[in-house]
Image (cartoon, rainbow, N blue to C red; front, side):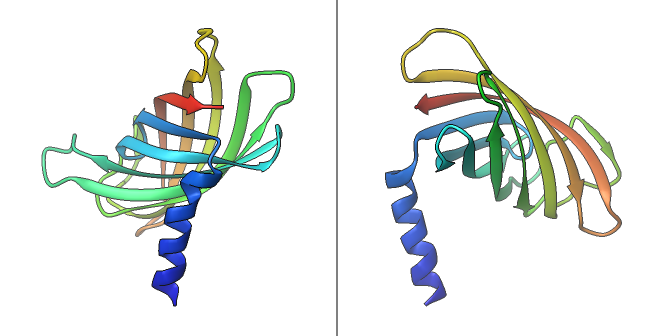
Length: 149
């Protein structure tokens, strides 16, 4: 039953998604996901997965989910989420080991005004907290492309 539910969510998420996003940066290096409207124009959910090929060893895989609050009348958004990694994550600044496991992150981002229809670019900053072993703080960032509304 659990596998059927996960399969159903994976198959239906693109149907409800308002956009597809691809990012380079934290937490996994190369990330792809969908952004879903929870409350129109105010609250969005994002589900993503990624792979880190930049560690010099085997690739680290992972995924996560964020809840994002859009600041009305601006291009700013902020939120929080959880992620899970099988290995090293991408962090620009880290205090301790970032070698996988469960973590939480904050998201502060903005869309860059380029004027292209249905294509947007964005930058984000991610303060991260890793729960594996002793708690570790990290700071990451990402640059991404948004395709859709």
